[in-house]
Image 1 (cartoon, helix red, strand yellow):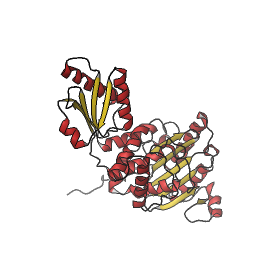
Image 2: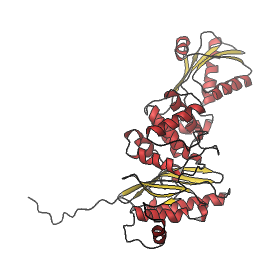
Image 3: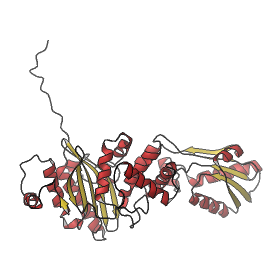
Image 4: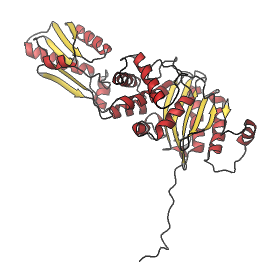
Length: 392
């Protein structure tokens, strides 16, 4: 079902392919552009919603309440939960110290989401290298015992279960039998001896910006779980679901038609509607708590996953679209904001019925960019002529 500003379908249909006498960027004209986009065969009947953020008015809808596979648009919910429940200035620390016995270590963590398993990525991006701190801990024990290490007791706190398994595997390959003992934060600090390693992550805000700009799945998942934990929910997927639903309800958005299977968008079982996402974008637009989310979105032709888009397809829109991208096999999605002169629109487009080919995905992205480019325009500041001003 399509809606245009409350006008009858017949009137709007007749105006779609005619030249409007209204401003090129007013809601009626914007609705006409989005109607042509929604009808494009390259998008295969997408779910679309367009809202004027200055009024909250729904400018255009097409299949807006249809449950669709959002791909990485799920990260918008992860980012909103991050800002709602985590202090944006918080950092996550990890320390490795000698333990209470000669052949022991204390790993005191804070579920750092920024730790990397890739040595090159860690070095390039100044991220904590997981196997690096494992090696430094072992070196410290060897130095402390002045001999070979055959057995190692590891007291640990606030590490992801996958990290514990990787530590076990790492030391096993070194010929070391390990015994892992989970302790509380206070216990970890009380039994920790000489420190062998210490690192801190960037701030919550910087980490959130990263997973929005570059669509990092692992970091998005971890931040969502940290937000769930801070919200008093379970530190797992069930907790994430409760947290996302609470964020939406607090913004007076009904979450009953969405299905959340992960926080990154990798699962094809995720279901969102364009209406829910556009309402979210509208509600956070002037909300002081969520302004950091908008600032962290990729910018057309300039940053992140939009850095190479629009430059050729819609150069007039470079710098004027801020949006989260989404890609799965058979799905191309985009949700964010487009500057249109003295107006700004929040939009969501989920095309999850396209052919599962690279060419189909490329064409769908091209169509999205071309049509958003048709309503994108900078906000022009009037120039005051002072040449005839009277001085004195």
